[in-house]
Figure 1: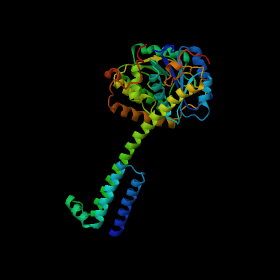
Figure 2: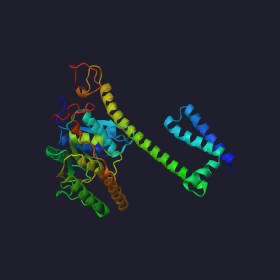
Figure 3: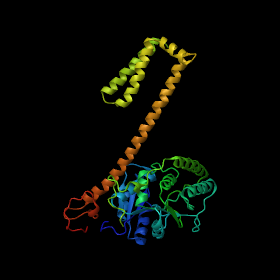
Figure 4: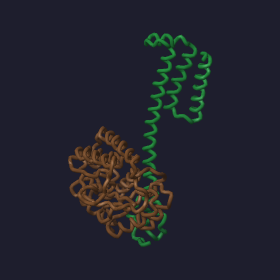
Length: 257
Length: 138
């Protein structure tokens, strides 16, 4: 829709105190997929992340205070809709997601509204153990059943959405981001969004602390179970295009690509 | 606790609510609830026998228990109401934060450009004010 846009896809990177890795991640993404625009949503960092990201060549949104990953992603989605992008993909700023997979995950949008870059889908060597593994297994099974398609990694942060998915997420996106993204995923699926998954490999995070301790895993298990129940009980929202193009819609014809 | 004491407390409460209301420190929708409670307590203070009468009417043996039960129900209701308001407020705050972040980026784009330069993404910039056709490199 806009001549200055090159691919119509926005790469959204939520960042919270990622100054150690964000520059190299951005540089790598710019080298591998120069046709996409990069948006870093700084979630109230204290370590100068926004300046570093800007220096590395990304567009930066600075949230006035910490909203959590969910809030940051929501801001990115809002930006994508307002500036007429036709799809958006979430990429972690800690370098866990391989930029070479970005276009692969985006390709999944051709016949669906949400495309998940999934581990455990035949590629990569990521292994989860103990309660975390069980939690992921149960979540996958339940959500696969709701979505009527095989999903092996529903908690993956490596996800792409098209305009319908963006609008769906704007209508209901978890602001707390409990239990990763499953809450919004379930509601999107219930509201008629099509989900697919693309096998990808996750890399070691370049810095920061991984969230793997038995205690944290147990909390994670309990929390995501609870969130899943809430999400399943949640009222179905209207599918965005059930309304046609509403007057209040901020997209301005962003679906045309 | 004497009847006079509870009377003093409830009158004090009503006065505090009215004072807060006058100074604009309490919104009307919250004040009304507290005023109703305060006035009921004052009435009860003047006519303590009312409580005995209501208690026997609903079949509560010790009138004080009726009072306690009602207070608990009321407090739970108020707590729930406040949680609900808080949720709405939080959502509004988040929406504002998102809006501020997006607008700030647009404004920074705009002000970073000197008058003979367009913002890098001027064509998509909602705050665009420069004339088209000017130099676009920075």
